[in-house]
Amino acid sequence: MSIAGEIVVGLVILVGLAGIVVQVLPGNTLVGGAILVWAILTGGTTAWVCFAVAATFVVAAEGGQLLLAGRHMRRADVPWSTLAWGGLLGVVGFFVIPVVGLFIGFVLAVFVAELLRRRDRRAAWRATVAALQATGITIVVQLLGGLLATAAWGVGLALTRGPAVPSTRLRSR
Image (cartoon, rainbow, N blue to C red; front, side):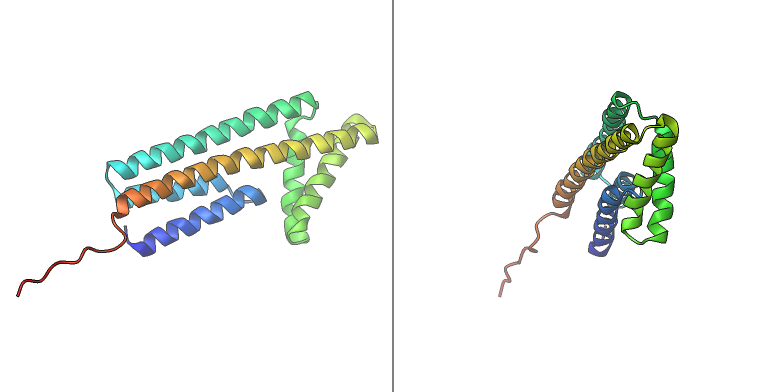
């Protein structure tokens, strides 16, 4: 793969990592997809092993975040439907109030959904805090998986690129 192609793959990986933090883009899907494209275009055993390692990190992170965040939500007795409402209004809020609207919309929707369900402001607020904690768990686990996948790609990139300085030949007179 050309250097320009590798730069594009790196940029897509950066966008994916940002998507993990912002929770608007499918971050690890972008990271894994970019590394897959790199492996296809680079070819060879090293590239495919690198992709397999990166894909393992991505899949483990996706499964881990569901398990850990789900356990946290069950302990707080917050249903997934509440998070769905939070996510939906968060996306709407992102476009209505750029940047901070995502957070405001998520918190507002979770609080209102739990207030309607529980009929108690304090309990609804505790559920909202639990939902925010679960979202934080999700972000941390996904980001860890994305960063480990990126590191695997970096190792694969270094191994497939060869020496950074071209060798010089001795000229005979």
